[in-house]
Image (cartoon, rainbow, N blue to C red; front, side, top):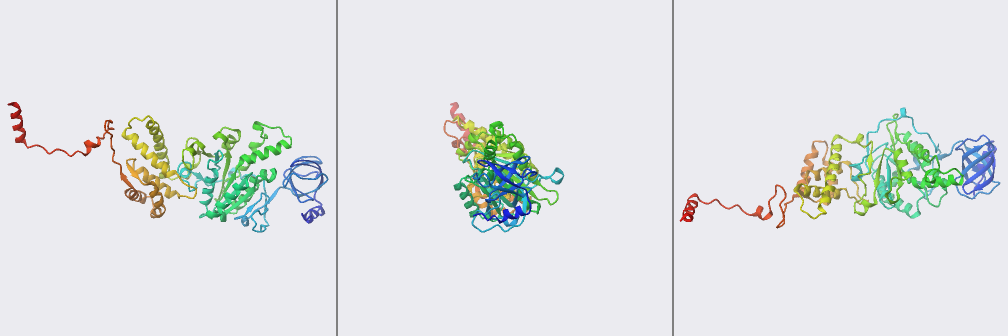
Length: 514
């Protein structure tokens, strides 16, 4: 039962007080509290908390943070001028609610610091240029659509397309760095939450992660507040000199919770029944990311958006894409082809990714895009069943090898150096070498430390190619036209006839004449 000592202290301190006069699910109307500001935090005598949404003189509308059960006549008192949440390093490694209550059974949170949940974003003069890559450990992302520290990049995809798996890989890949990951789970099922927590514990990433949880059984208000509260926790570490990555999983559930609260509040619905300030709600959140000029540290935002039927043209997805600096689209169609992670290369883009890449990395990315475009074209021709030219066969072989290298199970991760060595080795094979990609991927972790500078890249790649590749001997079937520059196998293997002696040749001609 709630100990109302805190409530009594606030009343005795002569804070503003009021009385609940109407309740509509999570929407509470209070009389009194004259002069209270919007966004203020209110404590009720039964221990529940509320946040002020509208104020009309002595009539105040609040969102109930804890539940939809509130008795009319309940007394209320002002607790904070702004909604505040606990912050600090003691939250790292814990699973907490948006209001800072522990959910992992590890005891109370040992912190006395608090911060406002709805902090403004840093101004343009307080920011610095983004120039360092955030390695996710996933080759298909790091080589094609690099994420930059301080960037806002959306992760879009249908249900079960691999979004959570990719984000789990990215989180696990930060454990050997000094970065903190803040993982926000909004409106998730218990089974999904337990699976994610188990994966974080298994990989060791939980030691450097704060999980902020508002599951499907929590109040709508907690689901609405979760990303803002988590961002405040991330900002506190960021301003204190820590690189932080924050994952909002997902903003679709957040938008739906806010829509339901707004409809209960009788706010006029806009497009797709979302409230008119839906864009502002997300832009004010995502703009809080960036790189600080004062300490050079970054806050990277990764908002997740659900796209049913792989439709990225819906209101919410287009809205988030217009706020962010790029998007990684995970496609169910690609997923069904057996490609993991199922990144759609045609729809994904990182608008600031090139700023964090070296000249060599940019050249590799450009070559990979061109090579895979040729592979798609060659694959289309191969469906007709006609013989392919030598160039088309090379494009087909090279593309298959690259796609095999890009495929990664959830537990497999590669550093940027390992990814670069692996893909450049395949490209050096030029498609006329049969490369054991699986063996190459297994060996790359041990070989990569040999590369100390740019000059050693080519030598190591040549060694890898000699060890794991062998020349492909083209064989042309009987009756099939040889490709340009090639001879049929029978002709190629036939030994050259020794030259006849000149005298024998002359004698044979005389015999023919007779």
